[in-house]
Length: 252
View (cartoon, rainbow, N blue to C red):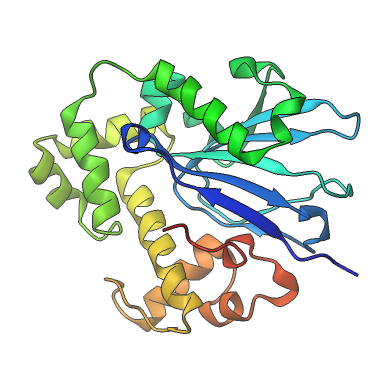
């Protein structure tokens, strides 16, 4: 008998909010059949245990397509993760993640001085990783980039590239060069992911027609299928609990 997915979510303190979206702990993932992770516009740092009881740390780039996930058939082994906003690539990790688009890289198992015992307690994990990120905070941030992401998130990706450019005094050419070099995709493609993510909460509430600025119902369904591999109706039904984001509550 499958056990229900158990999750814990926590938000970062205000000083980390530009860089960190959410801390999470997921358990009983091995009982989630045919799990699919769909794009959310974030960079994930994941901490898990291997079958040999070793710590495994992975950095996942931004995803632009649904990704099937297979999890170890082990009981009670949590997956801890930090979901970062894109600014973290440049200012926390300090390198481009363009080559991690739709993929991941394995990091040393002592990355940021973590060890296997740090996965025993979620609250302790959140405190330790927060302290580490605080120690890496930059003294200065490009105000144009900060405002750019603020606008993208506040407007659910609905502002055009031209509007964003005009609001942050950053040319469209510069913005797209930055996005492609730093993250591996265009600003428009990224905004489409954020709009898609905002649409998921509407679909979860049973609203199967576009609530955001899609051209029409056909365009809405096409974009949802492109990023999730399923229609809005299929997402709402979520057979076999395939879509993990539909099993996890949105943190307040």
